[in-house]
Every structure is written in C-alpha cells, then in structure tokens.
Image 1 (tube, rainbow, N blue to C red):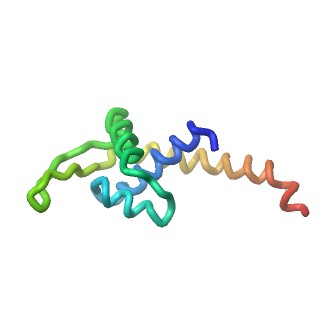
Image 2 (tube, helix red, strand yellow; image 1 turned 180 degrees about the horizontal axis):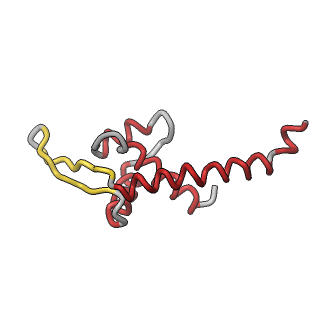
Image 3 (cartoon, rainbow, N blue to C red; image 1 turned 90 degrees about the vertical axis):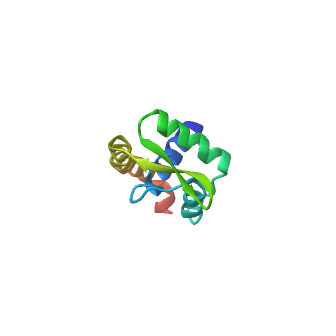
Length: 105
C-alpha cells in the first residue's frame, strides 16, 4: 500500500478512536486492535502529528499515581473524519472500476 495513503488512513483511525470520548495511548491501541495492529511508537508519532496540526489537544491527568496524557479531538479533527468519509466514497467507486473484471468472472 502507498505509504502516504496508509499514513492518512492511520491518522483518521486514531481520530475515530477518540471521536466519542477522550482517551490515552494504551486505550487507543486496545480500541483499534480488532481492526488494525498499531505499535506504540507508531501511535505516538501519529498523536504528535495530529496535535501539531490542530486536530487534537492533549491534557495531562494523574491516574494511579502516574501522569497520563489524554487526547481530545478538535473541530478540525472531526472535520478530517468527515472529509475522509466523503473522499472514501470516491475511492470505493475507483475500486469498483478497477475490480470490475474480477467481478464479471
């Protein structure tokens, strides 16, 4: 898969994982696991990129005597999810075109 496409897909997946409630790294990985495997190092790179682009904010809170970072999706992040869904319809049409011969067999 094209690396840029995969990067964009992973960004949207992470945003979707925190869409309904704030979350932290380990929980995000756990929530995504049934759908996609993601290493901690990859996740934290994505989270930092999304934070720098204004798609999420970060707050620190104490939990069990340790500091934990919680991530919150912003309006820009929600907009990115909607843009993805709109664009994905076009991708599906392209996929149908590319695989049309496979379906005719």
